[in-house]
Length: 375
Image 1 (cartoon, rainbow, N blue to C red):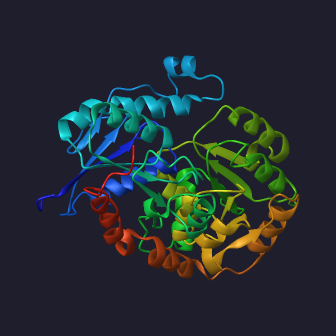
Image 2: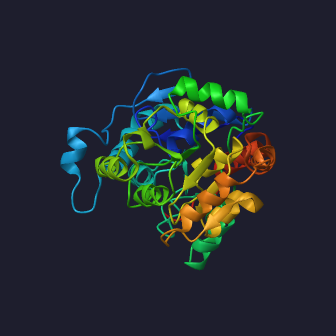
């Protein structure tokens, strides 16, 4: 590399028009690493304004007419967006000549691999495996596994260990947990009830993965006056049915749905009393760690990744069972909680950019210039 910085494209198709963990991570990663002297980092996205070292490339969007027309036979609008975005990166790749491309979306990587084979380009492909995919890594030069359980999972299924790197997802961690006075002020500003606990879940607003129907039913099991349930996330086709279920089971005044830009999520977390994530499997549940960073007690399904993420601070149960979450909520909201700062400190020590930044630099700089894997 002749001593020059390694040029890396950080690519995310949904940045600016979607609000998920992938987009949040891409934005934070760019902010945390752009000043590193070993990296020449560029952020490339599918929409939004252009800024210094930040490019928007014209491509298909998941909510557009063309993506909807192409989605069929198990291929979703999201997969269409990801693949099309990978192909649309070609002009930026030809102009910037990156040494590596870092991305979270598998279909974007497949498109980039196809371009690389056609044009004989030498950039390394680095997948951040947030979806906990178990196989299909052959197109990629390095796979960033977020948790020890995820790494064990893929190796047990035959993944090439030479391509795998274990590195936790990094987070911006607040300097303090909210005081009771701050929480009251935030609730007044955000229009949240002041007279009962607020239970929040930050997740895609769906049934099939995030299981928000289960969360609604479990809160409905609690006796009056129930906590207020706040569901924050990006709408999906299942969201309207969830809204109807919440109205039926919790009443108009017992719940709220919100879709907000990522910076506004922090305020909603700091205004709440407890966090719930009912999904049965995740790569590394970003929202769970972010909630704990704000000091919230976190309630989740009991499985290996949740135990890894929450450590000794997790409040876990078998959430395949009716009544399991309701029991956890009842015990959590009835107890005297003095562990907020310990939870924040745990996240800082294990997952903060301060702790992990040098390892991310090595992940990306080390990918460039390696002997390429067979194409």
